[in-house]
Image (cartoon, rainbow, N blue to C red; front, side, top):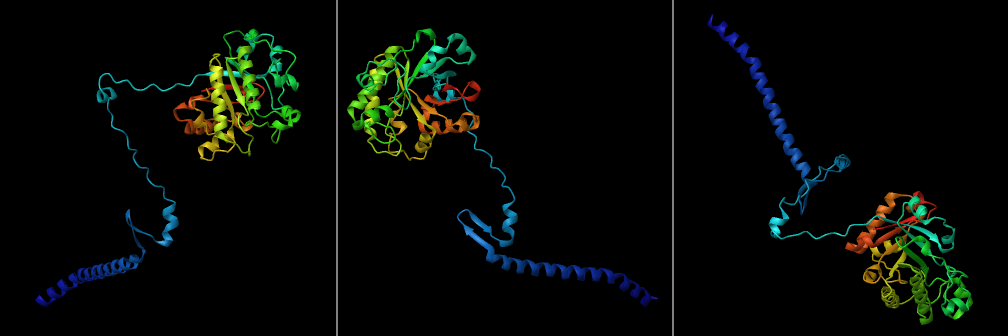
Length: 343
């Protein structure tokens, strides 16, 4: 009877012993695999200044597709500036852009506007930018400057600005050293591609006298185009700075502002530190001219995002004076960009 009970007890213990054996084998197998994997992965352990990492070839593509978790931004501590800086602290005032729009027309079109008040209201503008000359050198007023008289560059009549009223901001666009007619009729003053030589005192005197005449006609601002050497040419930027500084002082004595017209490419040059040799950097003109007008490319004038990008470039170049950057569109109406925003 006792032997029978012993056999039954041993039969009951056999499944437990078998289970323990299986678990033991699994544990040993896992330990062996861990040791093998550890020594196998040692070849892929890379030590960097940031710490230790694994560089497993067949996992690179998988890991590259996993986006990194964005880091929490480093927010500044919340404190009251008045308490930190003292009870009398006042934050500095930033220059706010002004919403000022100006219609761009030619001097010949001045006489064709029947009602200026209605025209300005219809285009939703506060001022006017009048092209009083062009790249050919032809003037849109009856100038008394000797060179203009000698070479037949003046108009027979002078537009009447009084019809606009004194409330309108009146700016005149004047082409400077690009003058095809003067270059053809006075070859000693000519450079290439219809430009005249800014190094010649007679040429600089001619442009300055034209600008002063426009101020006397009643314009509030002179916007000078082609105010340096021709693109790709050679010249001394100091000559241009000195000329613009002299002209700005002469106009300021008359209560008239001096601004310049630029191209889009000029601003990208300044941002990249690759200033063209035919003009000075815009930073050197910050204390000389009032505004930096920029003639937009047609696709830019139609694309608000491109205008925003260009304004960001101007902000990088001009710093706190970026509000003096003025994008200029040249379309057929306000929706196409035929206006100027002074910012």
